[in-house]
Structures are given as C-alpha cells and as structure tokens.
Image (tube, rainbow over the protein chains, first blue to last red):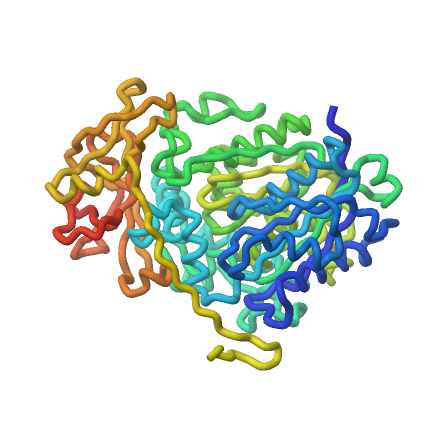
Length: 430
Length: 148
C-alpha cells in the first residue's frame, strides 16, 4: 500500500518577462527560502531527504545537467535528486513523481524545485525553442509553432461545438483580472515590482481587439512567457503531522498521453472514455478525440477521480488550477475534466461558473494567462497555489484576500504539455 | 571579443550555431518519391490503417508498414492564419496552416495552404496537395492549394 502524502509548504518568486537581476539558481533559492521560512512549519532545511528538479528546456540557458547546479546551489549534496521533463506538463509530472517518491518510502520529505528562465533569448527564438517540442520532421518545418497548433484545435472546437471567440475572451478576462490580486503575477504592476508595465485589468473588448497571433487566437488569448521559480515540499503522513497543523493531502493523481502530431490522434465515433457521472448517449455521434479535445486530459482526470473517489467533479471539487496556455485550451479542459459535457465548455465560462465567485473557481491565481508560464515552474506553482488555497492562507501570500476561495476543502491541479501530449491531474484535500 | 549587453547585472551575448546530419531513416522514401512527382506514404495491411506522415512501424500492432501512393486530394478539416511565428518563419508571415483530410489516408495531415485569397478559406473546402519543383527535403516540399 502506498503511504499517505501531504503538501506542507510552498514558495514562489515574483514572475516576470525578464528577471535579469538573478540567475536561474538564484531564482530557485528565492522560492525555496519562502517555502522553508514563510510557511507555518516546523521543518529545517536538513530535514529534506531529496529533491525533484523540474525544468523544461536546456536550450534557454545553453546548459545541460542544470539539475546538478541546482542541487549544489541549494546545498542538498550528496542527497538523491532527479530531473523531470515533460514539456508544459513538466511541473505536474514532477509533483506526481515527488508524490511517488514519498508514497513508496524512497523519501520521507521531498522538495520539488520548478523553474524556467526564458528571457535570455528573444521572444521569437523562445517560441522556436518551444516549437522544437513539436515534431521537427513534419510540423515545425512548415512554420508550425504552438499558437498555430492550438489555433487549429480551437478552430475545430468552434466548428464542432459552436464555441465563440467571445467565450474565449471571457477566459482571458477572468484569469487576467484574478491576477490583479496576486502579487506574484507578471501582469500585476500594482503589486509585483517585476511586472510588465502594460499589465492591469482587461475587458472582453480589449481581448477581441488585440491583434491576431494565429486566428482565432489573439494576443490576449495566449499565456505569458516568464522567468521564475516555484518550490513545493511534500512529506509522508508521519512527518507531515509533525511539520504542520494544516497538511494538504494528495488523494489522487493521474497521467495521460497522446500523439505529438495531433492529426495522428484517433477520430473514433462514440470513443469518449466515460466518467462516472456521464451518459453514453451524450457522445454517441462525437468523433473523439480528433483535434478538438485532449484525450490525455480526460485520461488523467479519469485516473485521479477514481483514486480520490470523485464521481461528480463539478460538485465535489471546490477550486481548480488548470493549464490555461490558451483561452481555448481552458475551455477544452473544462470538458476533459468532466466539469461540463463535451461541447459545453464555452457556456461554463459564460455562465460564470468558473469565476472567482462562481460555483467552481478556476485559476483564482491568474493562471498562465494572468500570472506566469515559466514552463518547468508552472505545474509546481499550481500545487503551491492549491496548498495555500486549501490551507486558507492565499491572502497572506498574495497580498490580497480577494483570491482566496472561501472554505475550499478539495481542489484539482492540471498540468499539460504541447497540444495535450502529456497531461497530469492531481487531487489535493485538506 | 565578447559583446557586453549590460554592466549591472553583467549580461554578455553568446552566439550558438550547429549543423545536424539528420536521417529520415525508413521514411526517406516519402521525400525521394517527390522528385518523381509521387506522394507516397505507408499503410499497415494488418490494421488497415494508412498513415501520413509515414511511419515505418505500425503503432497499433508494431508490424512493418508498406508504401502506397495517394492521390493528394482532400478537404480542409481545420485552419489557422498566422501573424506571428518562430524566428525562422517570420519572413513568411502571414501564412495559413491547415489539417487536411486526404483520400485514402486515415490520419489528418498538417501542411501549409497556399491560396490567393486567404479570406475564402473554410472548413470542408476541397484542396489538392502540390509538390515543390525545387526540393529542400523538408516537409515544406509539399503544400495544399484550393481545388474546386
């Protein structure tokens, strides 16, 4: 039997387009210091038994084996460490791997260290590096890059289900405006000294009038590129109870995969893997997953729900942090997670269900659109955010009570790599 | 001489260049067939599935696939118009990418759409694949164009 595992502490850096003031390892130290010293815990640095290091690309820094530099810089030698990489899902996979390390008994207390410094190359080169995480024989040489791939999927979602650009814009407004109460957020110039100067609140009209990057996706539909780090500490049940009075348990985790070339994915009629609350007749004509839905997201959720005994996610979850790389992919992910039927994701945001004061707030932190996407740090940031939400201390860390979801007891974090190649879903409960 | 970008903090510029000798392995035939004007791809006779891009090995049963010729005619499954891109393709902007549903192929194929009127493009529109006369041995050697 696996051991029970809890999150006990977390730390974040200020996120920024360019943190020129610090190196990548210095950013990791900034987040680790917050995790160790600003959470209400009884834990010394020497109590950490090993680390899971989470970063996406060796290209951004032109340095291989960066994990070893981190392990040395943070003073964890000669303890065990492993580097996890899985594109945009790197952070979610790292949290899951740390869970496995602790659940299995390999480590009692594990530190997950996630980061990325993307600013040392220009934005177009950065996009090109990320595009190298698509098929470089077939999809990249024709001018493919990620906003293009997601736009193709979004356009098919519109065709299949009638999703609109206005609904996508509502996701951007929700997440960006949530970020205005989170001091770590890159789009929050009032609270983050490293924020972009043209940040601040936005409206649906602002999104719709922002220039197209890749029709139907516009500049404000697309996530940030960031420098920054996130650190999470996990512990076994026995240790967790000594470390904190408010452990947050990991009660379920799932991981799914799909073809890197989205066109290679099946289009199976009535092929939706069902969740307990769903009815086969809803999807009897739907070709699945095609390029409109993320089968890996559905698979990860199915596993996590089963493990955590969740049979109706919309009712049983109180808060979600999900991978909003694009506004369209947040809408698609609502459906994969079973928060609504396939095809109804646009309506969910339109009805305000996922707003900060809605029935099931999604991305109260501001997500990737409002707060950060420092790739290897992102999934770890979500876990830290969920820890603080379920401990009821988001206000203390964010510098504003407005991001705290009241009485949240159970949440889901969702991490997602390029067009849904790797996806993880993890359930956390207080 | 190292080029200095800033003094505080100290930021230096370091260029990087590399040439790969990249093998297309068993899918080389896709590219070499283009020089005789043929669109070739692979089919698993056991699973009755035709793949484009070609795969030498069937992912369903792991048997070896066989080469077949395809017509290159089909329809647009979804499309996008790009106004921004990776550094390498900025010079081509704006351009269109499409997933095409081709006759005799079970997968969708991602390719450029070349058309005089980008505004007329829609899902379901008929296309045919074209082959470049000056082959670069890249997937950009083929593209779709409207074909009514």
